[in-house]
Amino acid sequence: MIHIFCALPCEAQPIIQNFKLTELKQFDLFRIYQSKDKEIDLTITGIGKLNAASAVSYHHASLNTKASDIWLNIGVAGHADISIGEARLVNKITEEQTKSCWYPQIIFKAPCDSIALITLDKPSDDYQDALFDMEASGFYQMAIRLGTAELIHSLKIISDNAEQATSTVNADSVKKMMAKHVITIKNILDSLKPITLEIDSIISEPKEYKEFLERWHFTQSERVQLSRLLQQWNLRLPNDEITKHVIENTTGKSVLNVLREKINASEFVIHD
Amino acid sequence: MISTIYIEEEIASHPRTLAILERFPETTKIMCERYGEIFNRKSQNFRLQKKQPALILARKHKSLVLPTPIQYGIGAEHNYYFSHMLNCLYDCRYCFLQGMFQSAHYILFVNYEDFIEDMNSTLNKHNNEPVHFFSGYDCDSLALDPVTDFTNEFLPFFERNPQALLELRTKSTQIRSLLKREPIKNCVIAFSFTPDKIAQALEHKAPDVNKRLQAILDLQEAGWQVGLRFDPLIYTKGFANEYSELFDRIFTKINPELTHSVSLGTFRLPKDYFRKLEKLYPDEKLFASPLTEENNSISYPVEIRDDMLGFCKDIITKHIPSEKFFPCY
Ligand code: SF4
Image 1: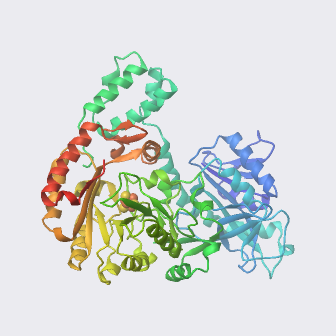
Image 2: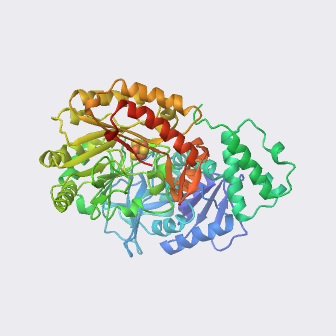
Image 3: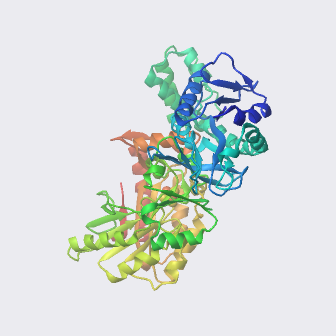
């Protein structure tokens, strides 16, 4: 699943339109939108890092997120001299108030350059050689508790700089800038999806696991052993149908014993 | 190859930092206060990062030179190891670094001068007795040598101190800077090997057995001493054939005079590291090997261990004198 967070409705609107998201009316603390296939959702967080953190937390509680999900904070930001309308991924987030830092891990070929960002408590025209925003640190520190650093990112579109200050920014101009970068967002998502699939393959239980739990009772520690033994079986005896060997057993313990004996008795070849 | 470099503020203007940054003009550079902010964070995935590791340039503040575990050694009473780098260019599935670190990024500690000073005090502590220093415990010693200039910077210390010996543990063929120097007696370039098919299955991105063997021959030709490390020995059905073929190939080619030492040890990992690796690579056959848990360590059952060690020892000691043989059980 992909979770997108924007501070303002004008930042969110082109994304909502493009991915055909509809509002989930049952959630009233933050506005949450979702695609028909439930693969992409978007929450409007409101301005500020505390709102951003609360929105991530609410979103997680409302939609049951997974460790392999993609988390994206998308919005506008200021910078000293990057041209208005350009996009940047964020490679370091510093929270101005606490000086805490986070480092999103960009392990894919990004469609735009990456740069450091400072999350401020108040808007500022005192531009630096880093992006300015007001949400990324709140978003990131909450999302990193739920996902992995390789899949949690902040994408910022430059809305103001030393030559053209915040006063020139309005909802319409933001919508236009965001609309131009829907393609950038899609590119990033295309690069992140294979990483999600890889994590899913790492954390998924062996295919027979669920069936075994339904058929026999296993204690918590036996479940861990079961998972490991099924994994070993699939690696060492891939062509031997497993169920026929254990079907007669009446307890989880005896099932584990049979699996262990059969695996130990099998020959071990490490290469093909 | 390296697309991101993190730089600790403290060493941003260190000459070695500047020299390395000059080699990578196109990379994204990110400043940080301490490398741990990136390297030690939870909620990151070693396996995913291994696809595109960043380089972190940092200062090592303490514990620069440390005593080795007791059973680790090739003939001296005083044994120390040091790590100018953490993590490795290669991706051996049995490597304990995957279990030890949260991150797959390469850390390079650029303050070589502090390592050398620490080695010097270590030597002084032992009153001119022989001291062995091992490199390549937390990284491959040579794989990034063209970038780190490690050998050029450290070898002069050993030239000046013949009572110290340096072991460079490696699977790399990056031996150019060694071949350019006059060989010294107190440096051993120790190559680790597993048989071809096992290497293909487990030692991802590492040079193949033939290339490593060629690097040994080139080094010996130039007068350098080499070591052979059959550690970890990996069990598979028919291991005896595979290992005897490997020993045959190596011992018929190398120069025994310039073979400093041979050591061997079977695959083993601390239990916590093993469990982490098993989770990172659930489809890896190595972790479905016949293994047992003993004293918080995962290793082959004693019968397999004895069988492999006995078999290998018999062959190896036919080729080299027993005083050059160091089993590491
Ligand atoms: S070469 Fe050594 S340090 Fe590098 S991955 Fe392999 S075992 Fe680990």
